[in-house]
Figure 1 (tube, rainbow, N blue to C red):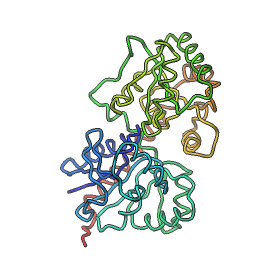
Figure 2 (cartoon, rainbow, N blue to C red; figure 1 turned 90 degrees about the vertical axis):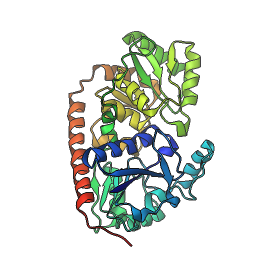
Figure 3 (cartoon, rainbow, N blue to C red; figure 1 turned 120 degrees about the horizontal axis):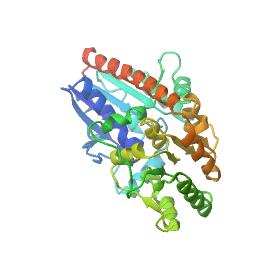
Figure 4 (cartoon, helix red, strand yellow; figure 1 turned 120 degrees about the vertical axis):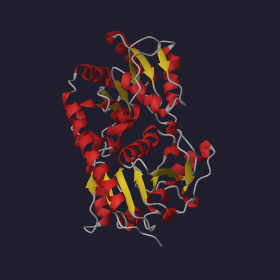
Length: 358
């Protein structure tokens, strides 16, 4: 049995790298004899995943095609091409074809799993509708994404609202320990795409460090958006008081760093989920908009873990230190159960579904 996991690990973004690893782990736990391969827009091998380029694969030779995780139901091809050019990678002409172009292939089982969908324009609505009707399973990772996909498909396609795959990230760390200190100190992690006022933000992080006796660890998570640049600027202003994790540290190791932190503050959605899923407090410094952050926080009733700017980061840190995590533990357990049921049903259908060949 051959199964392909389609993914965007080649953009080298924290969540996008870990999604296919989680899917692979969950499938192997249920179908240990399956041969699992990875398909990306570039065929670039990353994080130990030997990948093949979408336009160089005979899709009809697979028994299942699964695309899972990330806000990727869109047509932002110019954005993706810019990222690939920066890495020196040769991509298919339309990288977003990884979402749509394979769905009519004569394959036993095909799925969109826990995908995010920003508000679609008319062309994207048409592409979603044309693709989704050919799938065995359509799963959207939140209420906004589910509504956007449903409005594009009509009543003929069942769209399931699912938890984000990031709630299963800790399973990638089984049999290995998280960190308890960095440079010999307990710590909290910080990630950002940019500080509104660098000097003021560094002063606030120093204050948090002193109040709670924690090292500030600057942790880049979004290579594609070069978050290491503002973090390096904060490191330089910090004059040796902060630690900066190397941008090219393996994403699985960054997950372990999040798991060892006293708390995490940042602007990475999957840095946030990656912390909470390991029972570590986490906060988001993001503006109030109708976006993927609002979807996550409102669906999970976690709005109290948001600050709308870095100006109030000290207040957010206080909230994280003193907020009980009982509700987060219950949420994690609930989401794990839901995702386990989805993977159980998916693997059963892959095994029992009728063979489809051209």
